[in-house]
Length: 94
Image (cartoon, rainbow, N blue to C red; front, side, top):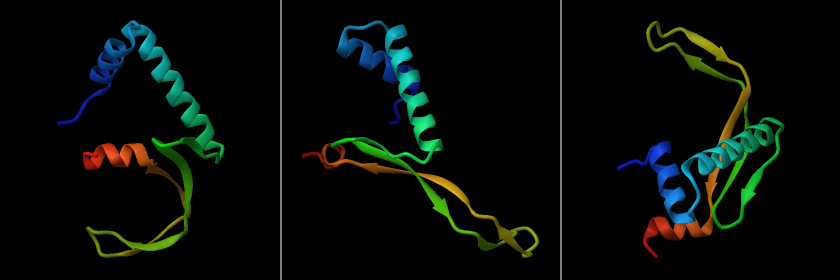
C-alpha cells in the first residue's frame, strides 16, 4: 500500500511533535530546493538515504506505435533517484 502526501505529513507531524502545517511547509521547501538544484544540473545527496540528479538523454530514433512511422526523439533530460545504504537496508528488512 502506498502512502500519499497527506498521510506522510500526518505521520511526520506525529513523530516530530510539530503541527501538520509546519511539516507541510518544510516538505514544500525541501521539494523547492530539490527542484531548483536539479534544474540547475546539481546533484542533491542525503547520505545514507538518497541522491537525486539530472541525467542527459541522447537523441534517438523511435517508432510511432499507431502508425509504425520512424520518428526522431530529441535529446533531453531526465531525473535519476538513487537509494542510499540506509534506505536499501530498510527495504530488505535488515
